[in-house]
Image 1 (cartoon, rainbow, N blue to C red):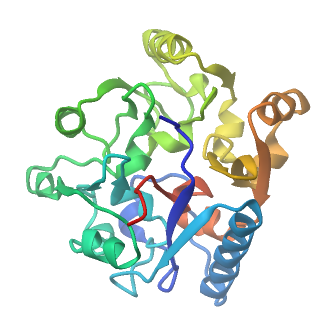
Image 2: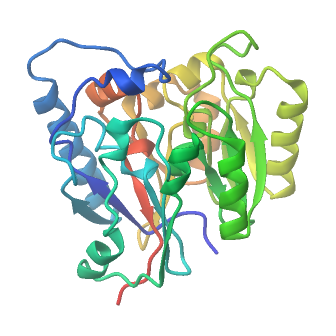
Length: 306
């Protein structure tokens, strides 16, 4: 199967703003006091929608279950879809993010014309303090059924084990920190550290303080036939790891922010372009206030149409 989805699901940022609950574990977030933050986020969201349309990528836009949820623009954290018709709901670390989750998502997607065969709800693990925030916590090589996971307060190894049992997947857990040392804060989500495409993987090996983790991650990616494109810690902080390959009848497209695109060195751009056309999108407000970038805004849709 293809790792690149032909369609995505997005949620409008109606309540977008600073979230002190998630800021405790997300060092990328900044508190901006600007009165027009929500308006700017809405404009950035519309710009992403327009870019996806130009690429021929299918889009489904949902309203947030909780209109006041500050992080609803990042739906990939509370659900994922799979090509066997499975929809998974995930255990979220903070109450503010749990309010985003729609336990009737299977019915919502069915009304949108998609075929859902089963709903797997892992959210009960929240009661045990076990968290796994969707394809933020998991960067999945779907063709090889491998889940890469940077362990953090939002990504529990026990929850990862449960996911692999439910989906029949193989796991590659590792530690990644903000400056690559053991003393530093863990990176909150795996999809800031790395991204996997059909024939490539962008990964910040410098963020992994344990040499064995760096070796294991690289070896696993190379065994899967991926061209490994290393990025630096500075590039990780500029969201270069937070990109996503998508595919349409028009070809392969790599969605990323203009912040990330500007941070790429010429030789990295050239190597990335061999795998798809880069599509930079302006999302500076969402990056600064929400602490996530373009990939975080896109929940891949692998479901078949009815």
